[in-house]
Structures are given as structure tokens and as C-alpha cells.
Image (cartoon, rainbow, N blue to C red; front, top):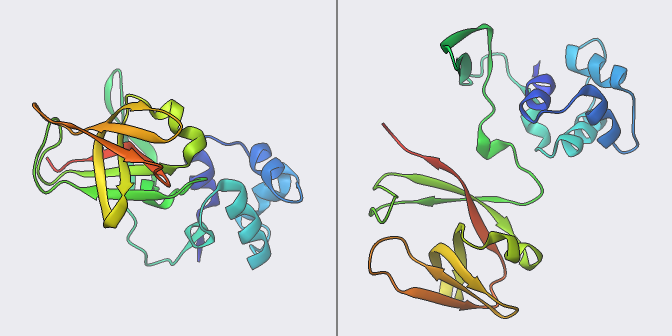
Length: 190
């Protein structure tokens, strides 16, 4: 098994000390470094502690040797595309997790700035976050298993108003939504 702790830690912009401090109970940066490099055996207990500290699923920390994982091979800088010194595993956004869950929306019919075939990744938020979601593209659950999607244009304690993408759209008002998912990433085929 190949350990992916270092790749995930770097992808999230954390230092060894950051991860060590986030562990419960806290540990040392040296211990995390030894676990990353394989100098110390990664037990199931350590795997779970580090996964919680990195806010990912424990399975993401290891992979089989034959895994075909997409690789970062270059980076785009102000001087153009540059090769990386060594290819490294790409961490897929859908696997990074976080405090709240990710959901995806498949665009089957283009509307506004969204094209047919687009895929939109959204992160779910609870009512306490609704004020900061104004003027963002959101997916809101409605009664009967339906959804409203568009720009959140208004909200109060009991309802949110969403304006669907595209010219001439009408706003949809949803009473007491259980959650709202805000758009974080657009995946579009070229």
C-alpha cells in the first residue's frame, strides 16, 4: 500500500505541525512525518486520527500500488507551463471531503452560463450559513423531492428566494429549506 498523507496534506496547504495539532489527542510533527514517509507503520488507529485531522475519509490515505490515479505533471505559471520535478498524485475534489457534504448537479439542458454536459459540484450548508450565501449559485431542496437551482437573491428567517439562470426566469421561494448547497466547482468538457 502507498501512503498518500503527504499529498493530501500539501493539497490542503497544511504543515506537519498543523496536522499534528489537529490530531486527537495532539501529537508531534515528527510523528506525522514518520508516518508519511513510512518510517513508522501506519496502523488503523493512526490512519483514522490523521483522516479526521485532514477532514477526509480514511480510505483516501492509502492506495494500492496498481492504482491508476491521475497525476499532476505540470503547473501553469506566469512564465507558462512548467514540468514538475516529479509527477505526483492528483487529489480529486470529490474525495477531499470537508466539514459538510458535497453533492453534484448534472446540466442536461444549458441555461444562463451553464452548458449542456456541465457538472457542478456544490457543498451543503446549514441554516446558520445562509446569510453568507447571498448572490451565490445554490441548489435548494423543495418539498416532494424537487429542487430549486440558481442565484440566491433574498433570504429571511423562514425562506430563501432563488432566481434560475437564463433570461426571463422567475424567482422560486422555498420555505424553511433543510440545507442549501453552494456551487464550488464547475467541470466542463472541452
